[in-house]
Image (cartoon, rainbow, N blue to C red; front, side, top):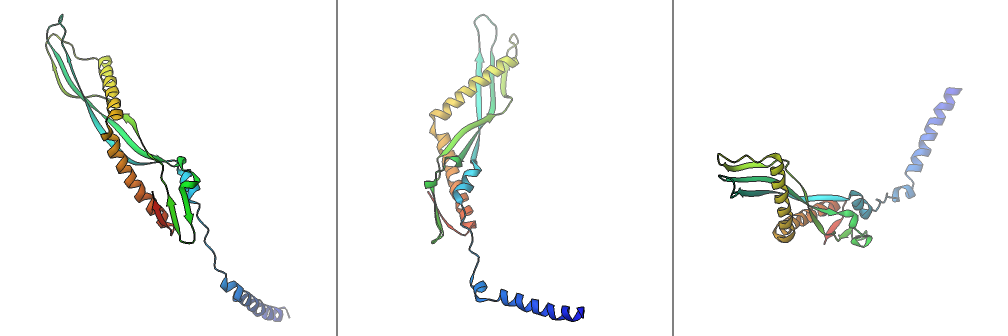
Length: 193
């Protein structure tokens, strides 16, 4: 008796399930993809580095004093590092416009920023000539030389646009490529300004 009921119940349940799945309403409803919120996604990233540059700075010192015998000549170098980045927290809602009908994203990027990120910890000795009666530079003198060279380098970066212009152009080009690929991977066409 129980077996007869199960035998009758299973086919009836399967028919009802098949009828529900094949109804015209269920077949016509296609899942709509969610509209991506590009603005929130991009702002959440914050800073993205797109270019960097290593610069070798050379320091030359020649010490001669009238009351000391001999000369002390030295040429030292160290590396300084620059980076170019875009801070996506500077984006405003007006900078990211999404046209869901045409599937186009218009993006106005914030400006590229360039900053000095650091320098190598030690001075490299390129050349040194120290006469017999002169002493080698001690760590205090080497540190003072490095600070003097670093101040000179920072002034050069501020005054000479060659450093920042080249790095900014390289970062901008990479940023445009990156955001084009990012938007196109989501099925939209990108217009990056």
